Image (cartoon, rainbow, N blue to C red):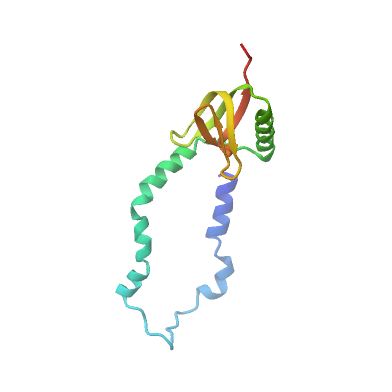
Length: 142
């Protein structure tokens, strides 16, 4: 089991903190009448709007399973390269995670612009999120 699964299991499956109250009998409130089932159902009605999104969420989850996340050092390297490209227009080959296909794509061309507020960079006609960039390679000039 990977580290993330172990952490989730510990956080969400560990009920040891509640052992002192687990065996206590239920006590009916003396101040409030019990809520009828219809009112209880209405309480959760706003979540019904999310009903149809299960399939979409599962599809996106499968797509992102192929994504390799960068560490801090790799992200800093990419930011240094992007800053360099702002002042030195060079041909590059950029490997980036395409959120639409769920696979890694390449774009070859010149750096065009960067929007740090939105965290996006544009090469030729392709715009991508900076954190989705896996690698930037300089191409030989011909």
